[in-house]
Image (cartoon, rainbow, N blue to C red):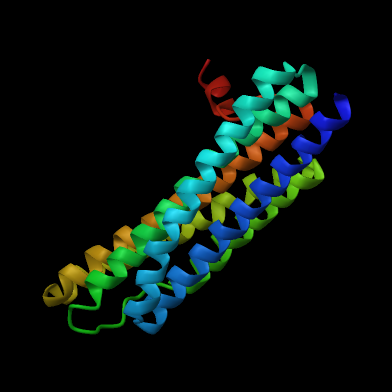
Length: 222
């Protein structure tokens, strides 16, 4: 019985790894579609989100089945709980990538103008955070998860700079306000993706150490 449970738990980890790979791929493709002004590529990102939705449901069902049939305790229960949370974050990452792709399709209908934002760098940073967060889950590495959380400050900074630069663009070149507003939303999507990666890292720390660090900032308010 224990062997069967261990095999199913390993399959669950494989499934969440697959989900993580799909999330990373979605971000890369969305960023490329924006950079290359490729409507067909943007459409593929939106279509691929359906596969992530299906996999999310399958993983959720497997988690609930494992809890119901095996009634796991301690670290095994924390593992399954962490996978449930991480699965949701990865699906939300897919949604954010799809939003970027949809906004890319919208901006392609407008006059082409260079936006003063390095979306490619933001996408690469967010993708690296996801990759390391999923790796920390697979390896059970809380230190690696902590490094992911530390990376969030940089993309927050990049988002602030993007917001400021695009607002300045609106003031100086109001004829491109629509393009700039879409740029602000895309930068926010990328920042939100990084937030989900940070959330995944927090769940890994909870799984490994049994310490909930998701809202640790609240302690500073007491």
